[in-house]
Amino acid sequence: MARDISVITGWLEPLEDCFREIEALPVAEWPVIHQIKEKFAEPLIRYSGGSGAARGAIELYLAKCKTRCQVCGAVAEPRIIEGWHALLCDAHEALATRAGMVALEKTWLGGEDTAE
Ligand SMILES: [Zn+2]
Image (cartoon, rainbow, N blue to C red; front, side):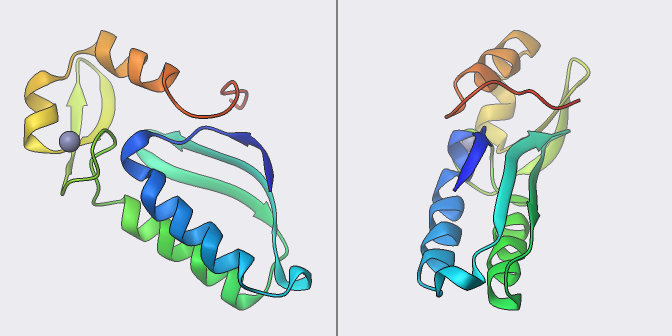
């Protein structure tokens, strides 16, 4: 579906729900997904086309992620860890270091983070 996917573990479940919803639509309604990534602790999907239902599934995914810990998916708040923007639950904030956040990015699924 997309060539460039970098999904943080805590945001994988809502992304799977999103894809399941889109894949249940007729193929003609599917958007072209160019990139899925995180930027400044927010999920980002670059896509074109797609029906209203497909775009709605993507918007729902983005909304769900905005309150989920990037690591575990628990309820989270925006944090700044040594200058690094993160969306973390209390438990993961307590454990977080900048080096840990960099390592987390490297554990994303998919390819390299190629944009900006
Ligand atoms: Zn967490």
